[in-house]
Length: 162
Image (cartoon, rainbow, N blue to C red):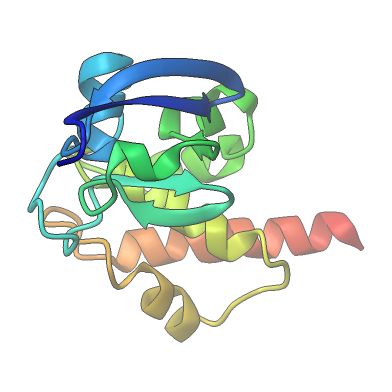
């Protein structure tokens, strides 16, 4: 029979963390409860809504579907980390300018997922933006403003590279 608790070494937002965690604790619960990183939210707990999105080794994942012990040795970036680094400052400003957020519950996951798409470079079509964000639910904005914000940032970033 395996142990219930395991030692985990993970880099969270650039800082090394060593914690003893319950083998059944999800990544989002670990971040929220053990590290007080509450930007990622617990929504559906089934991987459908995207509120719990975080980045693990550069890929956006559902924090409610991943166990903290699976992140042993990995790099985890939360909304707090990418916001503090300035990586998404332009996206945050575009969301504000276009009223692409209201209650804010989905916003961290939307921002991380949008950044993942924009990091590929170029200017994705509105259809591509919608498809990439399709795993993130918003019950307030109707998505139009979110797509507008992501599209605007993509165009601005592309212009800046010229």
